[in-house]
Length: 530
Image 1 (cartoon, rainbow, N blue to C red):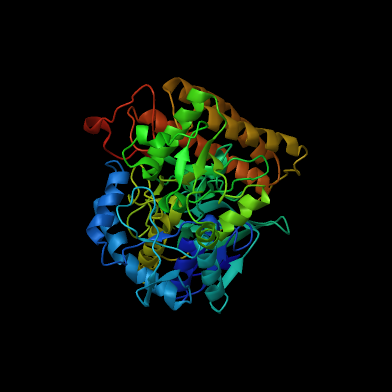
Image 2 (cartoon, rainbow, N blue to C red; image 1 turned 60 degrees about the horizontal axis):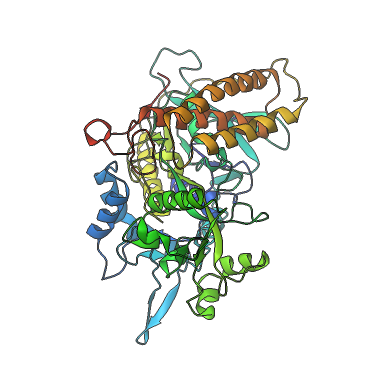
């Protein structure tokens, strides 16, 4: 058994930021199921929304965030994240991260981008690979810390709690079981401060912009531990995922529309103006539904994002990664529109927390996309997520350090017991169930929903969960089996949450209740096993 002052599960912007700050006060382990760079953060292209211009203001950023959140944002959380953002950005700069600049009238200033739902240019970026630069910067700094251990290729299995061990005293988080993929052994890690920073659940859908690691692990583990989960019906579909048979999960950044890109249908029409006066720069929920409607109406397989009216040199310089990727698939975005479709992108709900990342289970924190702080409400404003990750990680580190002085006596933790289970004999069962979950979620719990589709999904998921539970207890754990178990749990939470909300709001749109109902449903959807 290994013992640490702080245990962080996940190595994205939130997890690494927390780890760097906590390392000043004790030993830290960062657990990640692939390599340190395999995170949603590393895939983020657009940038970080933050007020840095004299033309902008905190009030405008708050207003834009609340408008996108469709009445469910926690305004106090929004204000804190927005106003503390500049200081957290300065800390990134002190670590060596350099955001893009431009020269204006003989002096240099930040080159700010604009994305859907923003009233001002406020998105700081590093070309079109902002997330990768942030990830590399934080990992480089982490490698310099003697007090931090990075465990790669380790997958968290389940949280260890006082209640699970049978104690009648106050329930709290005591540690976590972790599978070492190389040895196949499950290790016991003890810490009275566990931080879930596991990212989102995009892989629960057939089509997603997320990397393969996004299987909802943190939400599923927290759910099994009895922690409150909120607003899982609000899954953001990014409007513009590259439509190409060989282009797996490649996102075309919203920044392309921010720089003048226009969405056109198969007839070349600028169709977004029929759906929203902001056109192609409307918030993501509106754009995704509009594209879905256009595709269904016309029978076309995709729509097109057109930025060919911009100078080719500007396109190549501003979007080098997107330009080169499209070129690799035989498309020159400076000469032809890019074929795009919506795909599952961001989980706006998650483990219910306060602004300090504290959950309903003492000793357990959740930060980043896995958490539901109230920042995003019913729909995330573009590029707010990296900012939230930075600010809440800072808040959580301060709260966790303070908790140390009040730490309870340590309880002996049992080692993992595998019993008489055997190695998985037929992996095809895992892969079939994985594919079935992702397809039924896409078909029945997608951009536009109905109660009938949701009930069908619910019935099938109940059967799948029974099969997976039987499989889990009869065979040795593996990464594939753990991810399947977590996917099924998160899929069920999304369906149950969607069935609870009898209205349309933000990212949850149902044909049975097409209008918002503020009287009954202007509130969070909170689920817990208790």
